[in-house]
Each structure stands twice: as structure tokens, then as C-alpha cells.
Length: 540
Image (cartoon, rainbow, N blue to C red; front, side, top):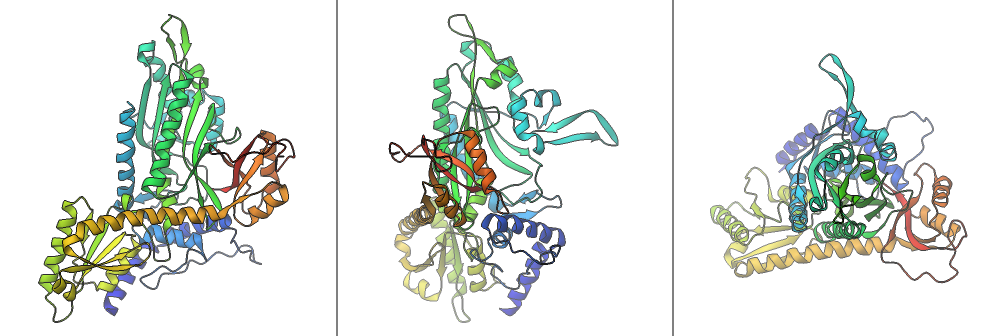
């Protein structure tokens, strides 16, 4: 056993502790420390933070005591990502990609039901096209990466790498849309984008290159566009709540926080209790006719008159995976909701010196076959050079929802022992009812993860009506619901008054489900008549 631990520790140190990786992990911690208000001031000012080294099977840091170090350690130790030699870029390992693929399969099928078709546009953007929509590019300008050389030669005209694809796609919408019969045009692409403005990247949450889908649609009427905006937003809610087991609020962004160049933006907003920060989960924008005007996307309507289209764009990214890790992970590692787990059940043999090892291995293999035939994603860990205890810790780190143990006594009684990852409960079940029982447990784990996350999120919601109450709640890392006058200058003032080491507060969204706003209610920040209830807080 000691030899196994020693070998594993050597492997662990070799994989995650090279200088470049440790340096970036330390940078991630600084970001999270600022987010959670845990950053400590040192008298020297210039002293570098030491990265604690792993010395055992488990994690070196706890979620509650050092969220940043915990997160950066979990995503590596669970084999979700590997650090790359370019800061802000990460290798998405199969354990993470499988989650993305499951969500992709669901979403792709749903948008195809809506007659959305997939396509692919080039990664590169010419400056003339990129700069055509002034408000839009101003929102992305600091993030745009440029190609300036080919070999040893400077390019005559630099080429941008897409930060998003509105300006890439819309010149061709203008070409393809001529008459009312060409509408609606509904395209989506699964691709990568590059955004390069920041100095402290974080895996999944803020990386310089990430995967996403972006839908771009054009309609004859605003009513059609408005309808689609909400249809897509509901699909995003389902991804978070039904697949990732994360509670979210659906709502509308303020004028200050909406998509640059768009008419209005809707979003789903999650919340991370440990850091007291909101996080934008996905967005569905109505672009109005602004881009149609810029790119001359006109058509001849049924009356023979010239008209401009109404457009939407919408997207979600691999950020979803990072939110899942933050919300459900614990001090043992990942906790995966069964619906997105690449492996829902791991079967582990328990063998002793005089046990029927082959019989136990055969039972494990048969159990996997039975579960797999029923559509359950299951595997057996039959590696003989690792102890059962080491395997328990390894698969707990990777977040597998259910562990099945089969030992001599289980073989004798035609049963298995099942352990849940979410709460640690163990149950003996007959192999006769294996499939039925396992399916039931997986459903319970999925629901329990959502319920627990919702309970924690809801406990953080604070309703305030005055500025003093707002400041107090902000200091307590709350998700704040406050009456607001819906004025851009007031929101700017809130940002200015709350700016500090932990970052400024801002509006997150105005939820569609509005509590009653009593007559005479004043805005918490300005004292003017309030028009709506809005979520506020610090955010990623």
C-alpha cells in the first residue's frame, strides 16, 4: 500500500507541479482570493506566494478555507484539464470534453427541432469588417488578438482572430437574404473563440481560448425574434438545471450590461456561495436592426417593399463546466451530476488473500455488462497494482456518482454494495434488482445535487431596500435583490461607490419572475421611484 501511495505521489508531482503550471495556479488563486475577499495583505508588498505541494492522495486545500487553490487543484487532479505552455490556454482532457459533448448533444438536437442549421465560418476577420460596427467592437477591442506576421514577413494588413462572429457572418447574410422567402435564416456554429485582454486567467471560467456555440438568426419581424430569444434562454436554463443541477435565474440585462451593439440581452445567472459572486451562465441577445443597418441586410417583403431584418445571437461556452465544479465540488474533488458524467458507475473488486479473485472479477465484469445494456455508463476498475482504498479516492476525486463494490461476501450473497458520491451513503442491493436500483439512485443523486445547490443559493439571497442594507449585504457575500429605478447613471454610480480590492458591484439581471413592487417603493441607490426588482452583486 505504501509503495502504491509513493508511486502515485511521484506521478502527481510530475504531472501538476512544474514551474509554469504552479505559477499559473498561483495566479488563479489571486483571482479567487479577490473574488472571495480572502486576499491577505503582506507588509513586504512584493513577496511571492508559495504554492503548497501535494503530499497525499487527497487535496491539499479545502473549499471553504482557500477556494482559489482548491479549484485550481481540483480541475487538474480530477483530470479535467492540463496546463499548457501558453498562459490562459488549457488542454481539455477527455473527462471534461465528455461533459461538453453531452451538453452539445442535447442542445444541438433541440435547436435542430427549431429548424436551426449548423455551419462553420473562418476563424479570421478582416479589420474593415471587424471595425464596421463601432459600439460592438468597442466592447471587444481590448480582447482582440491580431495576426501580424507570416513567417518572417509582416502582413500588409493585420488579421483579427474572432472574439465573436457577428461581423464575420453578417456580410454573407446580406448576400444570402434577398426576399421574404429567404427568411427566417437560422444558423449555429460550434467553434472556438479567442479573447486576450486579461492577465489572470482561470480554467473554464476565463480562458484566452474557449469552446462555445453561437447562434445567429434573422427574421422578418421583431415578434419572431423576441420569441426565439426566450426559447433559447429556456434551453440554457435546462442545461444548467436539468443537466448540471445548478439553479439559475432567468432575466434581462441592464442597458449598461447588455451586449454591445444589441437591442437587449437576456441571460441566466448562477451564483457561487463560497465567493459571493454571480456568474453569467449563458446569454440570448436580440440585436434588433442595428447590425442589419450596418451590413445592409435587407429584403423585399410580401408587398414588394424594402425592409430590414431583425436579428438575434445567442451562446453558451465551456464556462458551464467551471460553474459545475465550483457549485458541486467538495474537499474530496469533483462531484459530477449523473446526467453529464462520462462514467456514472465505477465497479471495484474487493479481493483478499484467500478470496475467489477470478470469481469476483467475473462478477464485476458481468455487473458492468448488465448496467451498460440498460444504458448506464459503467466501467470496472480491475487494475491489480492499486488497492481498493486507493481506487476509492481516485474515483471520488474524479466525481463518479456511484461506486459499486463486490467482495467475497457480496459474491456469496449475490449482492453488491453501492456508495453514493454526493452524500457517502452505502447500501447493499441484490444483483437481481441491480438496474432498477441503480437508475433510481442516479435519479436521486441528480435531484439531491440540485436541491442542495438551490438551498445554498437561496440562503445567500438578501432582499434590501436601502443603500446601507446593500453595502452590508455586499460585505457578507450575498446575492442582493433590490428595487431599482433602472437608470444607467445610477448603475454607474453604484459601480463607482463599491469599487475596491474585491471589485465593484453591478446589476446581474432583472429576473423575469418579479416580486410585488409596492407603490411608493424607492430605488435603493438613488431614492427615485423604483421600477423593478434587480439582482446585484459582484461577479466573475
